[in-house]
Length: 102
Image (cartoon, rainbow, N blue to C red; front, side, top):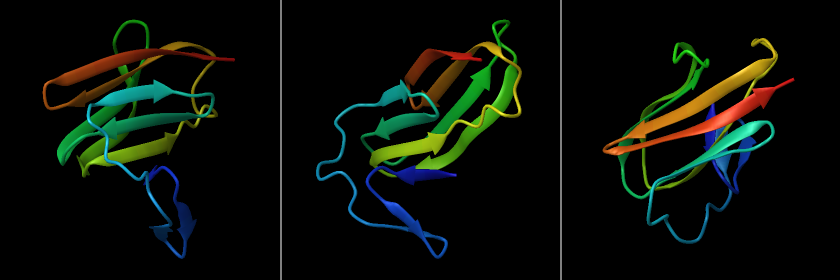
């Protein structure tokens, strides 16, 4: 499940304050155990985990998101150690980041 950054999960809902300013551009960041992304407007977002041959291993995000900063946990327990790529598609924006799992 994805969530807006700066929020807490309570009783099945995300609560708390989001970032004070909406983002001005699309962005994708891969952190140790999560993937952070931002969208400047309401848009359909697809984020997937791919192997080095370009085969989709695991879809992570596939849905409509409003302007904001989001984060999704990267569960590495169900994938083998190795090199992978996280790719985000939203409108005309496409970004790919490398992920190494141990």
